[in-house]
Image 1: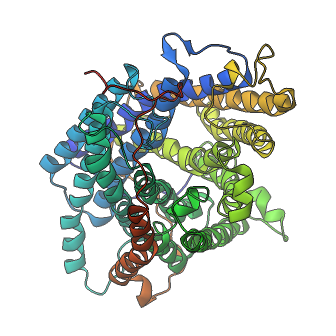
Image 2 (image 1 turned 30 degrees about the horizontal axis):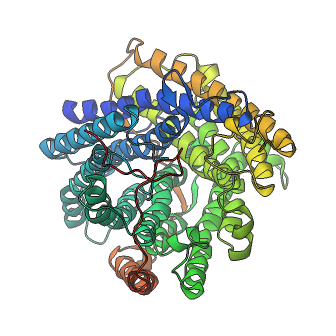
Image 3 (image 1 turned 180 degrees about the vertical axis):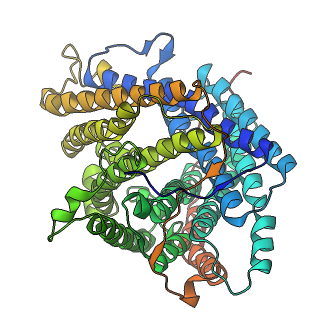
Length: 568
């Protein structure tokens, strides 16, 4: 079944080139990121008993995997997709000089951080998390990536306010609301980590100060680290609410649900970071409980989204002949080559069910003590970031490539199967890591040198089953990733069959409610500011009063402090 033709708009050649470059550049880097993901499971399973392979050390590869997959790829895509949404729905040209400045800063920053990582001077496991210390180029580089993304966001304000002036009393398009919500969350999240980098980490990394305030730096990092997840998730939600219903053959069940979800995450995405610090000293149990409570409130938009999208898919399936209480599920376009994007979205939703459930476990004070710093955490992390977020991002990257270049997808059967193979892999992979984590298997560690080496006195035979599942699932995920790269790059280098244009799938709305409470960002921004003061001012003050001794720098593979600043 082929979808009705969408509106296609001719856009400025410069903007078209920028969107394509911001998709292709991180996609090339993603090859390296996924390769190192495979290497991680091989090291940890005991198939590799070494510190390095091909000149790249284990912790260096772990940093590459995290930085490329979770920061560079996601940020570049969010900016590119944001440009597409703003231009398509608001119908106004953007300031291309500002856009190219944004792009240049992001690329320069990426290259600086990459140089530090690949030279072995920034093996910090992707985080800004002392006492692990990176070369200053790593911190400066990623700061430039963030600043470049801010500039892109600010470039969307003139067309937004122009549209508002010309459409008084009309609702802002749902996709635009979701895109602005994503970057508001990003702005809220990146301000505290910018403070951490500029005032704590760079002076320490440069050797200007001998130690760093670890509790304060970690609190600022998690002020950033958890809302970061919703920055990743909101573009996915934009796709789910505005595209998935039409791909299913139906309509969006509720416009209000989408707007409430987007604005609710603006309100509650940030005052939750201390639930990552339940085991940290210097933070009272009162504030840990407050953040745990707010974390549970973040689950509300997930439940609303699950209900709304299920109702939207049911509407489409029944319109296509579905019958019975559950029989309508058979009428969804799981393997439809013309609606292949449905598979990417649907598989992400299935994975996210399990990621949400395990997230509630992580945010529960007592249960977190069982799984904290074990392999349970990356299992959950992959079911969220590498599930709905990753699948929607790569699917939409391919969609935009096809539409903007006027090319046809090559290997369409492979393309439809990619998300299902990826889902199989990630479910096996995460099951192994969940089992291992519940049994105490540590995260991040190069277990091939110890816990999975039969010659080591630290060998754990009882983790064998979990390791096998983890390595099998990781290998299947790599196969799916390789299949996608083949489809993407063969399509990229194929011949255009028509003139390229900007086209986005846009669903009609079944219930188009007009609720004033979700028509403006202002009260939600005011509420977010108030909650941030309530949730973070007392624990930050508490941390500053605690007078912890500063920590010297460390490397991940050595328990002895580093005694000299990193060499240029």
